[in-house]
Image 1 (tube, rainbow, N blue to C red):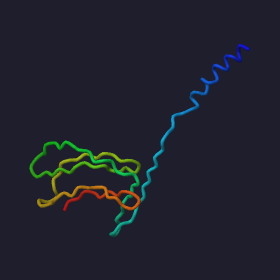
Image 2 (image 1 turned 45 degrees about the vertical axis):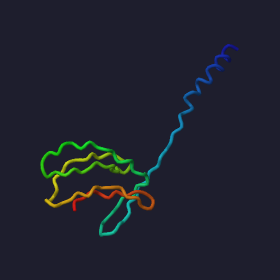
Image 3 (image 1 turned 120 degrees about the vertical axis):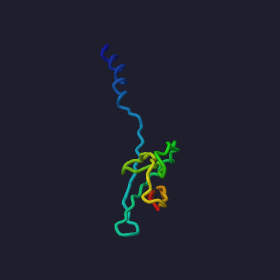
Image 4 (image 1 turned 30 degrees about the vertical axis):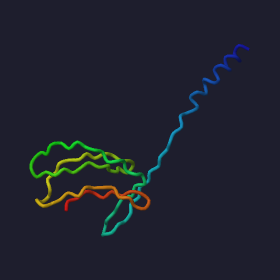
Length: 116
């Protein structure tokens, strides 16, 4: 009888680890889509990009440098922050056009920053 009482007390304790916390699974898919132009490709990301961070712009390293702001880059599985940096333009009259995410049917596409 005494063993039966111990089993009744210990049985609920044995089941404590059987119940786990609920988990949320988020599935993000990417797919490569063909765009205009020979060999042009875009990656369509179904997860909305995070809000752009406000960066503190450090002092320019010298005359002629242009600040290229940070952005959220896509690794293929998640977004990662790419910090801004100072760069020298490829030519004197060049203007930096910042990269940005564009909403497309089924997701988001990154348009890379470039010089004009």
